[in-house]
Image 1: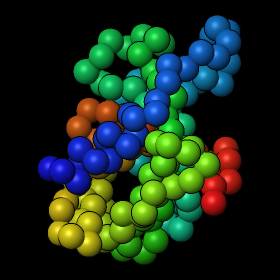
Image 2: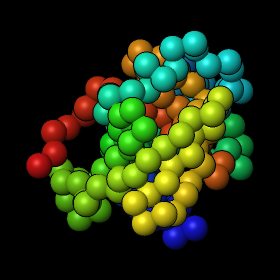
Image 3: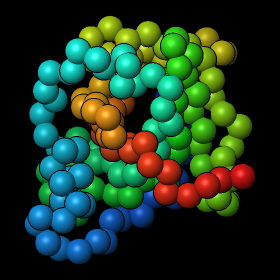
Length: 157
């Protein structure tokens, strides 16, 4: 449970409300619509799409909140990576957004839309895979949906 809380706190710690343009066709509204949409079927090549890439968290929405644009928030840029059966989560340092804290590493298993992470200390966390394609990933943990991209917004030390 502490493992889950650590991940959630790191994601939420430096988050700020998204304040981009108000055009309904803008990219930020597309992100909002993706975060709040129902999960669809996953592609047949989900394992290949997930494997090896660094996924940077860009935005999140708490599914217990109303589906309104103001409830979407900017994420802090934590990096998730899945390679074969191993995972790594590099959380952004809350005191310096250009640095990451010590990575959380472990193993994972994907069964359908559920990814079970098991840290090296033996703690487990379940993620629901909501969406994945060549560029974007949406994961949900404990009702918190997180939008990821393969494009890094900054280079950390």
